Image (tube, rainbow, N blue to C red; front, side):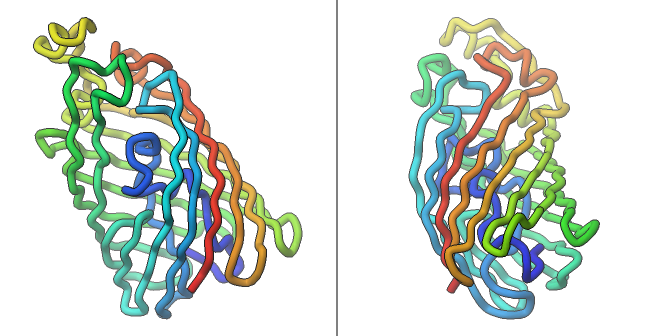
Length: 268
């Protein structure tokens, strides 16, 4: 959802898609956000983003990545890109956005961190889903997303809920704040935070059954600066906290996390 006076390049850390891989998976596809074109017009966004984030969800160590940004939306409601996936926005209005989309869960490689050795890889999987966004006021927006298909059994379900607030500081500066949480089913939780008897034997971690619930809560702050009517840079930080069975899992080394981002975007 986008009003004409909103930032052209909203939070990169919260927008990270397939190209940013495992380090950004905590935020990947957490919400649908409109980029580039005005409502009922063709247009896109291209750019480059740098992100410094945890190696995996629950890791104590971090790694950095640089990746391209490319998103496009058509006047008829279809969209495609690295930050929203592929889908269709039925509403095509300023105040609401609702539709369907195809995204991806980026999985997890056991070679990402020594702590994961013996747990096996979680493969990249396509997800089918839906989204609904609502502008609560000129500056405050609610976002929601539902995604299904993650994990090796392709039965993982993730529901994301979020709120965002944008505050203009000057003609070329906008400060944004956000908060969100993710609720997952038992299939997802077990894949990412559970440890089966076989995995326990191979990894040395204690066997653990992870059940459905709130996976994590998070908050972010982002500063946007317009270089021109079509170009801008963003810098920000996002902090997260694992909850429930995710927090208590032997897979988790550190329940708190942070992500730092720097991005450049250009409208075309």
